[in-house]
Length: 526
Image (cartoon, rainbow, N blue to C red; front, side):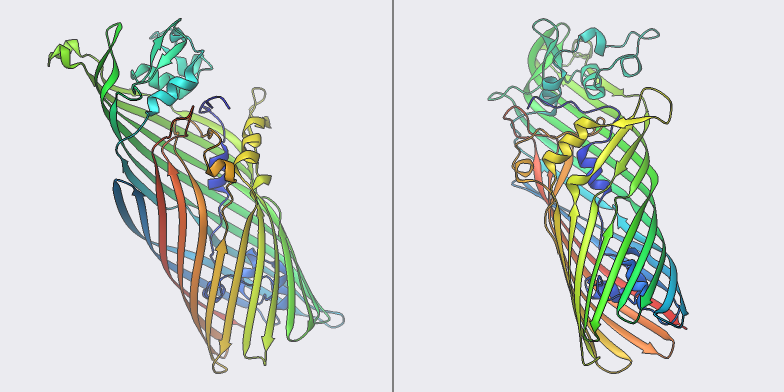
């Protein structure tokens, strides 16, 4: 596969994946049992998981949940170990279920509304690689082949390559900041790094933040105390920020001085500032069957969330190149300064993965519950559309991105296990476990593809495994309840400063997120 250009105004597979992530979030009871509620219901979190769960209610319910996160991030390379910490607080869940008891086969008809924090994008990745065996500039040079230098250069007041050409924006930025230089017939380019001769290192920082909030409207019912059904509509509000800072310094690099290329010292820093925001909606269908009081079987299907998204980003470079043979005379070493892109602004469409979940739960002597869930998330079903060239609101399938999604991503499996034991009629204890497999194909994880990213930010992460270990307590007093949970999340990933290309390995790191959460819920059933 030839070197893949970074598309200036489009969604990318890795960005689609980042925006499609889900976390274990909900009430303290729900989280304390690992989220294994597909077959249980009777909890405010089921509005966002299996809407059939509201059919279990025989009384109305209103409640609120607070979540305090202590977040730790570790980035590890052979030469460095960097740790960062954050503390965040959220409203995980605010919900109401209204129960209407009826006569006949339809025993109850219930409705519910909820607000919940579905995903938090907060994450910090920082690392250092020394030595490096190539350069971002060489990657830019590889995919810039074929562009004329005249197309990449400004003619101030007459021609702006960002606005007046179809050239890749990172190629333009690389050319104007002297990362790449033309060679041969003028449509081929050199990067700064000379394999086997240049010595260099790289530093990087990625700071992500933002959220997905979901508002659910559900209807459900109970048929003969055996079948519970539900249907829900979820309305999502998304905001994602990504700020990156990548720098390289090297000796014996290909430095441009005048119209010559000499061996000198080179350093540059690339900043990217991205924001994505928008809204979307999805549909959830669910069913729970209780053939006997001791057994419940549940299933639910979630359609994709159909997002309409807005994007904006800007990139900037600081650079300094030095020819030792010229001494310290500044006008003989003129390539030092700052360049930036225009502000990019555009729209896109994203369909997140389909979700299918199954659950089985057993009730023992009306004192203990054991619940097991299996979920399949079809990440390879994600699709994107880019803004067309016709009417303002016209969109066309991003075929190249969708083909790359099929190469990079596969379905992911999630297993959830929950236990609850009622010590007294008022007091309960809970345990839970939740594990998710990687959604990245083996070929993509092994570097068999040159990975497509978005805009002028060439960095990306591939998640490996995610695990949650949870515990909780619950207390009931008449109509009032209060629950608490401790949740530990461990996520392992690989970070890549840019894609491997033409046999060269880009700087990368192992990333581990360890997140400790204290979750508190309270509410009334009436």
